[in-house]
Amino acid sequence: MQTVIVEDLWKVYGRRKEALRGITFSVNSGEIFSLLGPNGAGKTTTVKILSCTLAPTKGKVNVLGMEAPKDCVRIREEVGIVPQEFQGFSDLTVEENLWYFVKLYGGTKSQVDELLEKIGVTEYRKTKFRNLSGGFKKRVAIACSLAGDPKIVFMDEPTVGLDPRSRRSVWDIIREVRSKGVTIFLTTHYLDEAQRLSDRVAVIYEGKIVRLSTPQDLMSEFKKQSLEEAYLALMEVLGDVS
Amino acid sequence: MRNVASTAWAIIKDNLSSRTTIFFVLFFPLFLTLIFAFGFGAAAQPHVLVDVNGSQGLVSFLSNSSLFTATSGIGEREALLHNYIYLEVNDTRVSILYPSQDAYVVPSLEALVQEYFARPDAVNIVTKPESGFTYYAYVVSGMIGVVALSNGVFGITGVAAGYYRDRLVDRLAASPLKSYEWVMALMIYEILITLISSVPILVLGLAFGFIPIIGLGFIAFLALSTLMFSGLGAVIFGLSPKDKLFVAQTAANVIVFPLMFLSNAFFPLDSFPPTLRGLVAYQPLSVINDVIRDVVVYNVLPSAVDLIYILAFTTIFIVLGARLMKLRETD
Image (cartoon, rainbow over all chains, first blue to last red; front, side, top):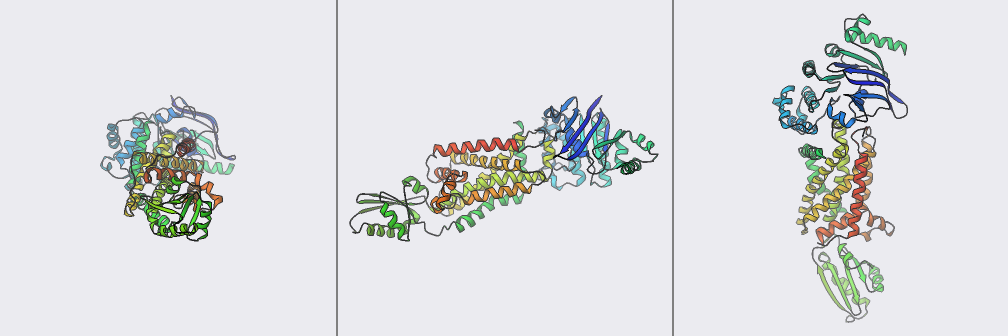
C-alpha cells in the first residue's frame, strides 16, 4: 500500500524559478523513504508540498489517500513534521511545548507523558526550550511531530548540525517510530544516515528525480561500497551532462 | 476556534517570560509618556486656547492680545473636552469656564474682556473652574490610545516576525492550526499587553493628580481599540514579503508615527495647521482618543458616530488581516 503518491509535480516560484520540474514517486506504507540531493535541489519544497504548507503549481499529490491541496485541512491532522530548523516557543518548557502541540492535534494530557518517555526527554520536561541543546531540541521536535499519532512523519534534515552521538540517538528514535508502523519521509545531506536508515532513496537534482531505488541498488549501479560514493559518482555524471 | 485559547496562552506565556518584553510592556510606554507627552507636549506651559461663543469681535480682540488664541464655534462641551477655556457672552453677562490648571490666566482674561467691553462695569463676569480636565488628564488619556496603537500594530508585526524568524511558524503551518486562529491568538495577546501597559501610565497620571474613571466600559473599549490596530498590524504583516520581514516593521513605523503625531493624543486639534485639522480629527487614533477621554476623563457616553466609526474600522481590519496573514500558502 502506498502512503504518498506524487505524479508530475511542479513548483514554480514567481514566474521563472522552477524548484520542482515534474517529479514522480511514491512512498510505501511503513518504509523509511529518503529524498537526497544537493542544496537547492527541491527537497524542502517537496516536503512543504507534501505536508500541505506550500501549494503545488501543477501535478498530483496524494497523501494517505487524500488529495493535496484540496484535502489539506484533513491531511495536516494526519501527518507529522519535523521541520529543518524546529523552534518551539522559546520560553515555554518542554512539557508546555509538547502539551500545546498535543492539544492542536486533539490529544490528552496523558499523551504528553507518553511522548516525553518515548523520546527520552522526561528529565528535561521542566526545562525551557531555549535552554536545550541542539540534540534535545531535535528530540522535542520529533516528539511534537508524533503528537497526533500520525501515520506518516516528514523529517526535513532531522540531524543537521548535531554531534555524532546526538545523530545516533535521533536515528534510534526514527527506527523506533518506524517499528510502530509509521512511514518516515526523510530528507538528508548525510549519505551514511540515508544508507543506514532508508529502505529506498530518491535522488533529486535541479528539481527532477534522477534515481529512485534501494541504497544497495544505487551502490551496485556505480560499483561503490557506500551510498555516499555512489551518490558522488551520480553527481559527477549529472555534472558532465549539465 | 478550539485552538485560539491554547495558542494565545502559549504566546502570552512565551512572551511574558522574557525580561525584554516586560521592559517594553511596562516601562517603554512610561518613558514614551514622559518624553513625548510631558516633554514635547509641553505640559509645563499654559494652554491659553479660548473658545468664545457670542462675540466674534471678542475673538479677534483676544487673539490680537498675543496672550490668548481665540476661536469660536467649538461649543462648550467640545471646548472643555479639548482643554480650552470656554467663554460665553450673553448681553452683559460673560461666563468663563476654565480647566483648573488655567486658573492663573483667568484674571488676565477677565481684564481683557473688561477692556474689550470698554467700561469695567459694562459686563458681569462669572468664572467657574472645571475640575478634572487638566492637561495631564488630556495627555495621559491620549497616551492610552497611543499604547493601543503601538501595541496593536508593532505588537502584531513584531511578534509575528519573531516567530517567523524562529521558524516556529513553519511548524505551526504544518499543524491543524488555522490561519485565523493564529491571528486571533496574537490579537488576544496584544489586548492583554495593552491592558498591562496602561496601568503604569495611569499610575503616572495619578501622580500628577489625574484620577481616571476606570470601569468595564474603559476596559472593553481599550480591548476594541487594540483589536482595531492589531487588525491593521495583521494587514501590514500580511502584505509584507515573508523573506523580507524588515519590510513589515518599516511599514509599521511609517504608519504608526504619523498616526501618533498627527493626532489629538498630545495636542488639541486647533494647534494643528487648518489644512491638517480634518485629517487629524478623523484619523482612527484621534477618534479613539476622543472616546477614551469621554469614558476615562469626562465620564460621558461616547458619541454613536465615533463608536460606529471604530466598530466599522475594527471589522474591516480584522477581516482583512485574518485573510491576508496566512500561516501557509495553501490557505
